[in-house]
Image (tube, rainbow, N blue to C red):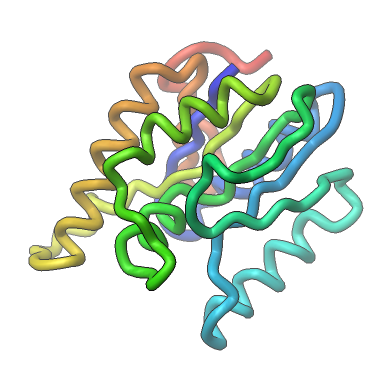
Length: 170
């Protein structure tokens, strides 16, 4: 099963996605994607580690090349989050671009029991963007659209409240 959880910054989407994955029977793997560089990133990583403490998640870190991550076949995977993977693949010195990212995510989904992807809704800010920022937003939007089309369940989280856009929560 593929689930897409989308929302704006600090909307509660990560907390909701964790709770959703916790309801599933079997192993839970938290696939952490944020690069551990810079003070702000380290604060976010610490916040998310604290948030999932004691919730039964094994953590796997994968900032680029998502197809390389090793997972148990019966895992319920929470990928936190898609904007990080897109940015890392586009802008990190280790990144390989986003051309194959959709197929890598589809492959990841086929290798686990459930894949829940947390992603951001970043275009509603109303600002004009250009250059690398615009390209990043376009790439993320294209992935969000493709994943939403193929997902079994799509949930938008606004102010910590889930709005089911497609499917139903098991």
